[in-house]
Image 1: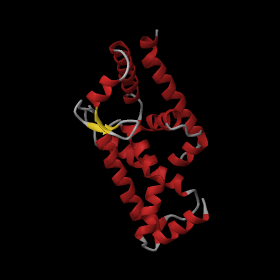
Image 2: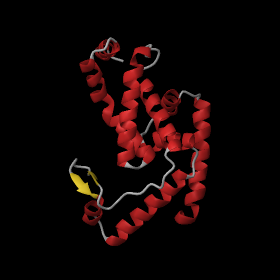
Image 3: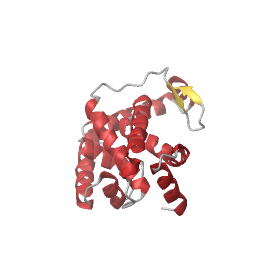
Length: 192
């Protein structure tokens, strides 16, 4: 943690809203990205994002500098994702009319993004693969899904995931091992 970040945290702990906003700006994209990757729905990811920063705002006075601020923040994010998913057992779908940001940051509907690239066969195969992966992820326990997401979609190391999830590296490896096995089993027929 840099001295600048330490100063922002201390100021935020004393009620400085500008300092808290600077902290949010520093990490907001990562929080939203973790939430979206885990949940797979932009509206739900935004709800999680808001809940995370509300909890961080309420709890920042309790931050004791025993870990990196980012580790603490991502632990809060992980906990909110796990809680949100268990509370919101709903069928996840994306409307073709729902607008979201494309890779250039422009607002476009899913239908427009689908129609832009590749042949219809390539898009169909890509969609089918994505659906199989999403279905496989749905069958994992919340902890396995989070570890798998943090490792394979976000590129975190086992030690970092251990800190984020507040568990041992052995537990993370165990979750990852079983998640990987289940995903392989789920995708076996599709890949053969």
